Image (cartoon, rainbow, N blue to C red; front, side):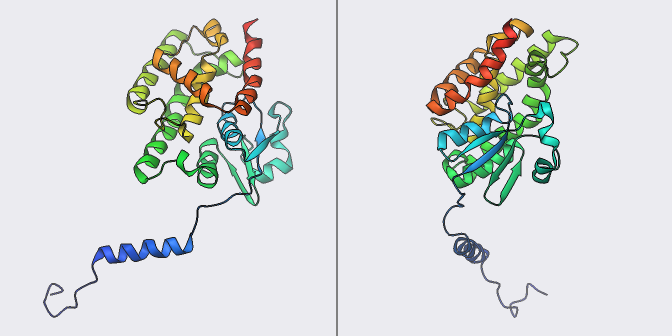
Length: 251
């Protein structure tokens, strides 16, 4: 039997684990580093472009190059070579090219502000949960029924009141789960705050309520205000463009 006393005792598992992490540490000494000259290709009014751009401006690690999807720039050979799915944002940092807002945010955090992802696996997992909830639930099932029709990029739902109610209920559950502190990241913005905070900041614009009757629940409204106040002057200036865009929907 392999349980017999004559068999050589295996090395304790924890020793293997320690050696594994020691090897990882040797191979990956220091945090990942980027060029400090990140470029985001996209449009400033896009709710998918705003999160990584606000992070970049707050952390002073890059800039944006306008890619006008209204004129099909995202489908030109140069841009399709970067992102064959033909969407924005596209990020380029040296020889690293990424698309998808959440993937870009994770990369940016790892290179330029690790604390904004989380200092340990528990914090990072919580950040991932919030980011994935935003992608699979909030943005795809609720935000899309409110912001897009008001902005002129989508058709209003059959019953706007029901859509508004569903959005409010989902955000209230989100607040109860993730907003025990001022932000998802506690006292400071983390990358999930950039993703969700920018979206609910957009929903605070008076054009949203005027055209859809939607209004953020109280806790989310405060969160949106706190999010904006925590941004750098450069990021607040960047948001003047998106604000002006929705100002045109008040007429």
